Image 1 (cartoon, rainbow, N blue to C red):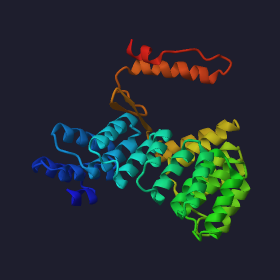
Image 2 (image 1 turned 180 degrees about the vertical axis):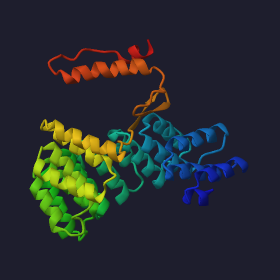
Image 3 (image 1 turned 135 degrees about the vertical axis):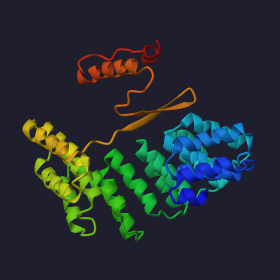
Image 4 (image 1 turned 120 degrees about the vertical axis):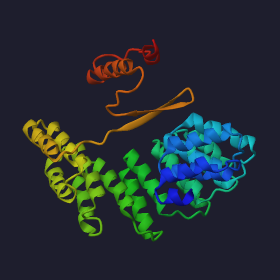
Length: 355
């Protein structure tokens, strides 16, 4: 089963799982962790539920894997249920399990709960410090992230490239340009860490969002290893759209289309850029080119957790129950967003959907 999962043969692993005895946790654990690795997080939690119904006792590996699934689904209530089971099994002293629990709360947006786990960890290693810094930074609590980073240094825990990525990302979310540049230089000059593409991405995003587009472009041009990196160019391209810098934006768009002509996101951003300055003919030309090339925007997906059940939603998916009521709610909210002069009115969405 493990072999098939690692070779990408999920169906073959499932077939074997159906055939073998499942009295021990090991086979269940392989399925749960395999599904998580394959990105099938709903299926991973489903196997965990089946395991409980089969009265097979979960162990530390089980909880670590299923918490990873909850993290990716942002299924907070499911994660809390797993936390209760961990307490019942008296596994709170397990460093790996508690680390996974911290990660789950952090990625589900329950930052205070994550910090509660962080405080009682049996040992705070670099991973736990970094996870907590990431949690604060990704949820807008940048000053707490920076303070925690300072506390980590005082605890003689040496940061690595992942820690600095968390700090740079936090600065980027909060628009702290000077602080972000400071930590970027500290990473190189003090800790001797050579920045990777993801570090440059945070820096470009930070400087670009601040409107310093030419400076961001110069950083790319000065580093041959990243000059033509599509991801970094796309980050700067988005900043050009934000600040309506058409000259630089169009230059980057040409490069992106040359390098990856089948990427619909470049065309979409370019059409939005034309629309922002009311160049409708140019916008229609871009849209026509997309149609000619057969390019479409990949459908978006989101999910929500209601009454202990996770509901996925795909763009243009018309198969959902209560679809008409949901669409009415969306139209109602959209009308308020489009007209800021209308004061906010209380609207009982749940009552509308289930009435």
